[in-house]
Image 1 (cartoon, helix red, strand yellow):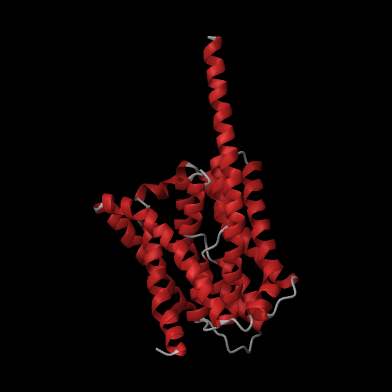
Image 2 (tube, helix red, strand yellow):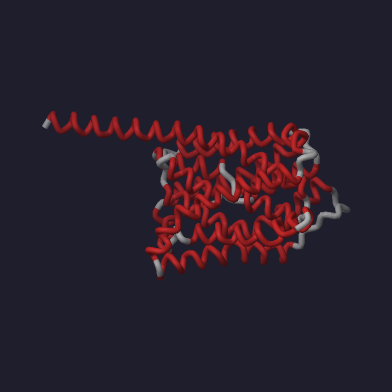
Length: 307
């Protein structure tokens, strides 16, 4: 198989199928009552979704305008901030001892909402950064249908499996999460190879904005949730949910819907950075969680002795 055929195969078949499986994996973690968490914990979910769906795109748009980026790289930033955290954020939340249920709930709700917001905002972004007469046009309705097929449909299938075959769903959850991380890593390697002629240029151009976006959004998630009095587990979930984007979906949209490799480089490089910062954050937050738990146990023991 020639190189062009391999690239076409990856873009048109492998990426959509794997994205479908990853989103179905998210559905395996969900039950209908999870959506009631919005009513049960409105403050935590509200803060998380506000950060994710409103503040994150605003910050991304501002950075894409302020930083000296080529139009394609700027659109890549918007692709990132418009795609909600996927199974990667749920996995890292679990490792950091965060509120996994809250993380999954935010991811699921954001995935449904952004099916309709992504095409509209991205279409505006293309006109803003590429120009009104650009060759890159995004059919809004077709894009919505594509996103429904690749997000809402597989999530629904996963939920049905969870409902009628819970043991199968429970056994598959961790494997699917790991598969998501592995496949995302494969995508980054694949893009680096295909775009090897501009990889250094892309890293220099998009590395700073990716790092700044990642750190600023994580800080925003952590401190807004802290200011509103959320506990450590909830703060951890929101921090990782805002800072870890669904890069697989971002790359899919760049390669398949927009057919532009250069736009995919920003999500690819952001992925490398977010894995690094998330790994560091997991160590820091899990250590803080253990310290808090230890302090609570010592306080309980001391109180018992005083009785």
